[in-house]
Image (cartoon, rainbow, N blue to C red; front, side, top):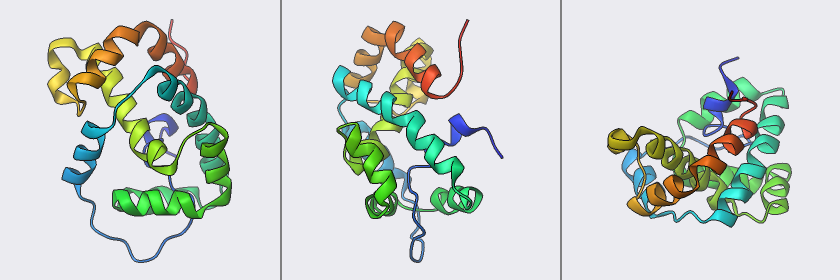
Length: 154
């Protein structure tokens, strides 16, 4: 199985879906740029991430799900998460919506990576506000993201 933390963005949906639509990278980029991170929201996302990852990788159809999800549009990934009672229980338990999770996790990851990249932040899809947020909270966010991904940093 591929490395799980890098697949967390693809593992948001948990139910089998209808015919797949074409992914729209521009729509995904716009959604990430429009998403506004706050400390409470980041904490909720980071708390839900390991639980959702465990749920998805424990599914017997995890490989198929990953492949299917990689081809789906943003709207399809949100709809699939909403249609999966166990996945929705996870996001609701953490005070999130399906859209918060599907858009918020990549927005948070990109903001953290952009904050770490410094001058190279332009390589990451993150709004100036989210980059500023991540820079201001990087010392707290990076260890929490590593823990959520099951990685420990020295």
